Length: 476
Image (cartoon, rainbow, N blue to C red; front, side, top):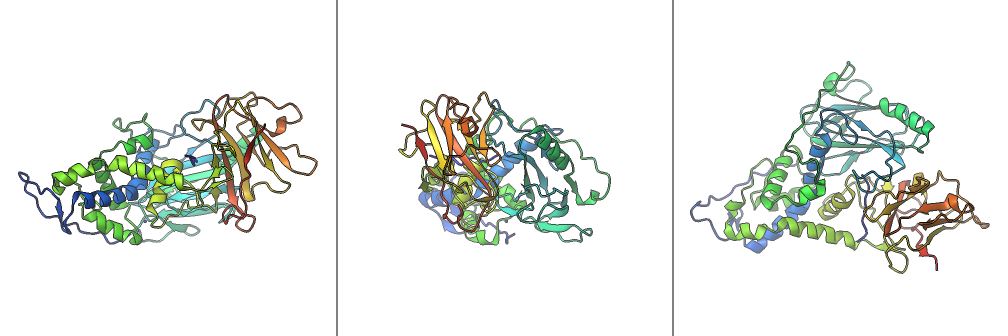
């Protein structure tokens, strides 16, 4: 399976359950909607699991990423911004599929009690974007060069029920949920001079609660919870939750991260199991047969999510989707992206084709040599930038003598007489005449990822399918 790696209110339903005697629970399970067979309950539970996967994953991510007393890259306390200062090297193992194109500025805020104000400085036409994700991973706003330009701009991120007035010059961005994840990315070419310029820009970005806007503000120290597992990958922590623990956490989170109005049908369905915003979920109230049937829901749910990821079209050996960032009621797609591309942008901001095999369907291997050919003028069509990154089998950078992990439009490529360009994907240096076009591969298996930031929306465009990534070919 190809992997795509990258780092809503409604009327709350009152759930009425029919009481079951503790000494003689109903075998088939009962609720305010009548009896459910184990199979019926299992089907509803699976749909509910998929629906809540993004919400639970964002929360578990938030816990791990904010569980520090002070900023320690890549983590920062709630309400503070982590500013990535340099690109990772081949020894980096914190996050899969790291990039060497943009420096991150990210953090989490809770807008339940009051808005938070994000101030972005003059960026002098530099490409950047600052996506704001709600608790379900929908990108509800994305200031940046594509949408709002690069001049100074200030936003108040407000919660679902907030009403009030804002200072002059502060624009309201209303979050559908109390949990907000800020995932800013700033383009940097990786030179010492550009690092310095981006660091200056990063340092001028501020995040403060509305009550402190325009005043001196020192953020409080973060609160460290020793009970939070800081070692096990978040996805494993989510997937390992029991049925009861998963639905309990999900119901708790839904209180302040309300489902969208369009979610009412599935919210009504989950209520039949006793799953409702802010309510405790008790699996035993459903009866022993139903409770037994629901035990496998986490495993079956994850299997369903991962199986859906295999359904993406294979285009010249590349797999990708343009259904990211805004999911509507496509809960399965939302869960798939959460599992393998958490924090994905809207397609208008970025598309990430990945490839694990050549045109013959054989997995890439450093024992072989490969080329990626672009006809003249046929580089990925973007307004922002494009890059090609080499990853080892685990989606980490590949150690090499040049410390080169990507090729992109900022590279001075050697062109062929007809203006086309061949990129050389292999373990050994192809020689001084071709080294500029060389992307070093590992000894064993490897993976490739294209990044198209701010892809063009008129033909040729990857978004409408009028541009397709060329095939990677094995050298005979």
